[in-house]
Amino acid sequence: MKKIAILLFITLPFLQSFQCGKNKHIDWLDAVQLTAILNDSSETIHIGDTLKFALSLPNPFTTKSGKLVTVNSLQECSYRYIGYWVDTVTHALNPSFDDNEHFLTDGGSTQVTGVSDPHTHAVFLNRSTYKATLNIVPKHKGIYYFYTEIQASRLAVNGNDSYGSKVNLNVTNRHLHLVETYNPGTILHDERTNAEGSGSYCFRVK
Image (cartoon, rainbow, N blue to C red; front, side, top):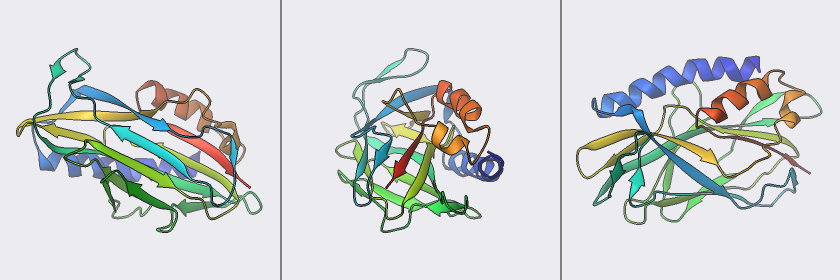
């Protein structure tokens, strides 16, 4: 887990300051919990298969404190994710996903956000449909590790209301044992972050 933990330590402060700079009134404590729907939660998939992480913003949505918010207009709904590919032969931890391994549908958009860490991408939901689907099409055999950032997501609606948001996945088995062999401590770390509302997921590609 050392490599992943170090990268998280480096990128997270940057992302937090990046987001806070956009709007000083973001309520990180009264965060909105969102759930991405995964189309296939199998431990093993094959090269060329497509994993779909579909996210939509409910309308109305409920904040952590129980506040019910009706969306009249959406300025931004975004989340950050990082992906790695573990070479099971060399045990190397490689940046992923390549440009030809991921794309968005449902009108969303994505961009690289990390200055020092090119592994970090941002997904922005479509402002009209409130949706975005992240499609991952693996090009390498091995183990893939994917997680969303804690407190690096932003939700802005109705012109002046901004909240922190967290994105988790609708899965019960995250297959974290796959990467634990190569990065001891992954399971302990991810169980804690998943409980806090962020999502992580591992899968094997053959």
